[in-house]
Length: 112
Ligand SMILES: [Zn+2]
Image (cartoon, rainbow, N blue to C red):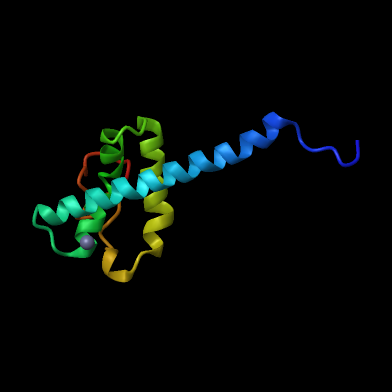
């Protein structure tokens, strides 16, 4: 029928999905920022080292803040694959990869 609006459930579904994605994204960055600053507090001053360690602990922090495990892992992977390459150069390190000198879990093949 011409001019018919989408059914109510359809109209409600999309904004809710967008809102949840946005919340997850915000929670991910919040967890990551907390992890980053925590490493500074532990004495790490170099931004590249600090950021790499934070990237490997974002899922851990997100979980402690209440994000479900699988989502926390997805957020961490997204930050490393999509966010990290766009960060300023001083926040990046050529050793921030699986097997690199900044790999906190060298015995694992999964990174971060
Ligand atoms: Zn910093």
